[in-house]
Length: 150
Image (tube, rainbow, N blue to C red; front, side, top):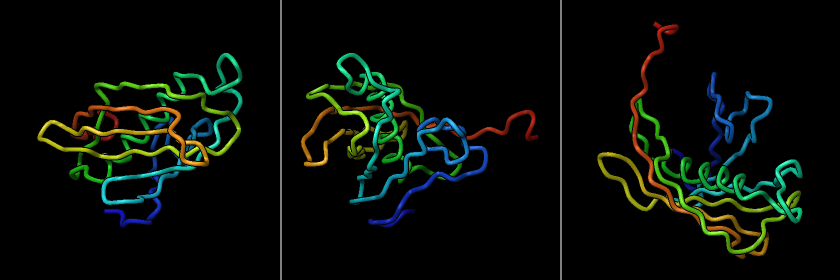
């Protein structure tokens, strides 16, 4: 388990995640740090390619950032041989998120049960103002060997 202050890098071979893969050339390559018992944060600058109307970060892309943050927060507590999938995701857009400027993406695990996790996330500007808030429910899944790996 990652200690508080430790960086969480998903450099696993074959990691195809759009948000965290360090191998995939078109990945966001997000890197999170565990900042508290159940909280992770990443500093990220959204490329201009992901802007929407008005020149700010597209709302759908903000959902990607929130989903990644809640997933990494849940990752801290995944049992061996499992992963999670997001089954419910809600966002509340408070203020525009700027492109090409550092933002903080924070995820916090609220609870775990037999089925999965419930977590919250926020996108903050460099002064700590909340720009977007989100909440998610994630279900646990067991890894299965693919036919090619057998």
